[in-house]
Image 1: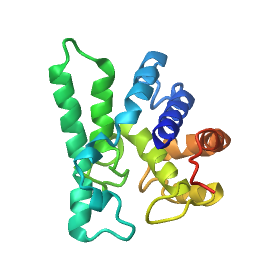
Image 2: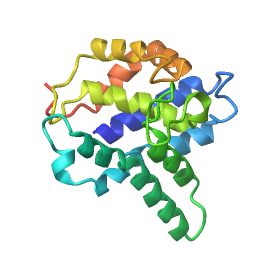
Image 3: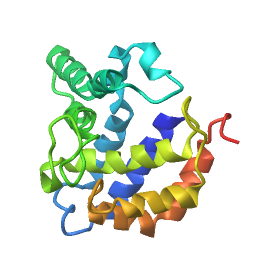
Image 4: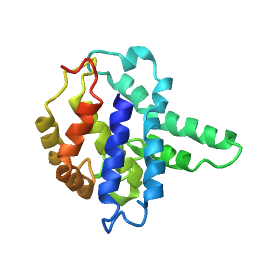
Length: 192
């Protein structure tokens, strides 16, 4: 359900922002459809991460975290290979590659894998960054219980201009009820 939730969050954010002056040129209705199709591939690179790291209940060591971070590169490389193998171009794969590669970048440049900052981060990756973090906060993980929606909202707001594009956070705040509805619709059985 993480995939369904993040896909729905990204579609909702993009739909909300498609008339915003900073995003309107890219976020046509056709592009939003392709973006939503690509969103489920954001963590495809995790297939290359050993289970003992993915399923570790405690904090990752520095070395383990470096291995975990490689999922962004592995994911974009896998999608790039799929593009090369395709008989004809598949439009959503180009978007998926951006998302997989850069969804852990941060607005202030402190993210990974490339330390991109601000508008240098592709818009699809900026949308996925917020969707992915929100979902991680509200979901049970092997290393933590789910967080209440309101607390997750405050964390996202607190990272406005640091982790996240300020305009994307503003859209999230305006449509927070829709985010909660998506989370409830695709709730995991393990989330209280």
